Image 1 (cartoon, each protein chain N blue to C red):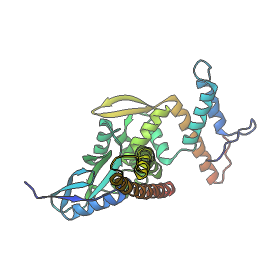
Image 2 (tube, rainbow over the protein chains, first blue to last red; image 1 turned 90 degrees about the vertical axis):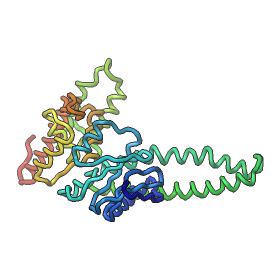
Image 3 (cartoon, rainbow over the protein chains, first blue to last red; image 1 turned 135 degrees about the horizontal axis):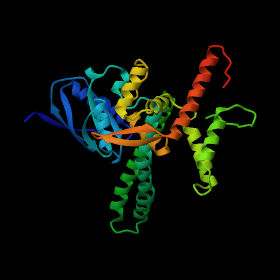
Image 4 (cartoon, each protein chain N blue to C red; image 1 turned 45 degrees about the vertical axis):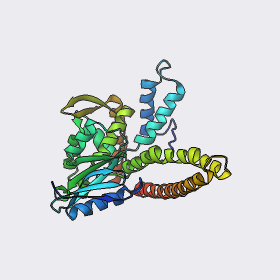
Length: 183
Length: 145
């Protein structure tokens, strides 16, 4: 049994570029990712190698043709995590810079970000406005049993949601703008 | 996107495009006026003018080909100057198929082969004319259509 380690890292839906970079660093240090589950990353010991990691957001829409296409391009698919698909390719097999990317123009990157916004951000906002806020207000008003406990609970969730929505919203907008200006 | 103004006197190649769409799609049995209008504008918006990747994909699909095959052809044709990556290729092919510019031909070992449709050919020809015009003008020649 090879040596394994599990790390806890929080990457939001807007942090995929950082996640790719981090996974590449880990592989350079001799740890290759075997499984990602929300915020738990399981690594296995391996020979240190410069391997490029790329994430694509497909949200369950992937199919056999999609995977075959990526396989043809030299990408190894090895895990799925919350709608994101994980690919890797050794840097040694990359001839041009574009070979190391899964998107070659800004338009397709923008579409990916838009897909993330539509299927992740919006539901988050809906839950926030339709579930969290009403419950928070009701708890504060005291019209619910154990009101004080729920007030604190929903209060914390409220702050967390506010932070997440703002952080992701701003970062995704910035990424979209960056990709718009790319070729 | 620049607004497109059509006048009977202008020799805008887009006139031809609108004509083609008119013939193909404007029979009242087939579609409603509004829907055709919306389709026209949408195809115009997306494919005129075309992105480089879009042009090369459409150009290569004059023969049946699958995604990776197109990618290799483009890399060879352009001498490595243009690479279409996996995600971009998949997305563009899906979009073009949905818009009716290319059609699924057959499947070989889990690879879908596509080919250009008549509509795709019309749009490709428009783009080729545009490129021809740009090229001629760039060499100081007057474009005569």
